[in-house]
Length: 342
Image (cartoon, rainbow, N blue to C red; front, side, top):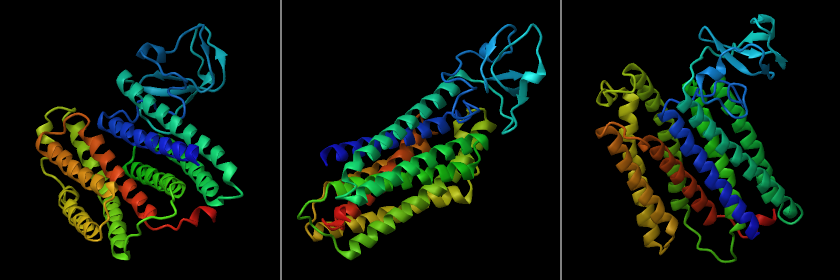
């Protein structure tokens, strides 16, 4: 069980790294750094120079390898060696989207993000194989591990959908919510593997408040993606310069997102007070409140100091950390020690 616990913990950490990397991708505008999926311009290892995407004579091309001609993407229909002149029959126009720019920094930021995602997939696969030994004695763990594997495969497909849609806001939001679902599954495995014979059980009121906090945080993340969309538009408008203008003429959603944080602060303050009253001295309670404090500070820094580098992905990471830890806390102090035998 200890090995399973460690594998689940490692998987959770890597998923959080994926969330952080995804935040950096969006903050830097690198989401289309690789215009295709799962490869990058048809390469396993992406290009480092624009010239690598030009058509070349007497060159060996692999199937689906991409070139750029007249600001349009074309992919090879099959593997072949090019002749002295360009033959259009060997190529097809890439029609999933019309984004055809190459920026080496954007490409490699997105590529690293995908590598971390692949590492997350590998860790969940190892978790599933590790859980098979518990199939007869603790089938719930095996079932959840299989569900985690399905979830991360679905998440990979969503990643492809995000790229194919040229980063539409709705697909990004669904992609983010699916990451939270995956975290819930992994934290469930971790909680069940950590069940002890005796554990302080929290009251129903505290459980409901924690559930409310999780729901509020999910709403905050959803509205945050809309705020991010607004900022993306301003970033493009001012060519990533004049950051002070990014928060001019803010939308009602922006105001709602900023003001809604008070509800999260109030609910978690009540949770903290109630936990102290019943003598629950869980480190998770203190960690959550510290993270909420950091979340507020990061939001203030973004708004008043014009979005310093990394503040946006850190802001998102903290939100998902709070959600994950609260969900883990809820399970850890509610599920029966017999749950792992289901």
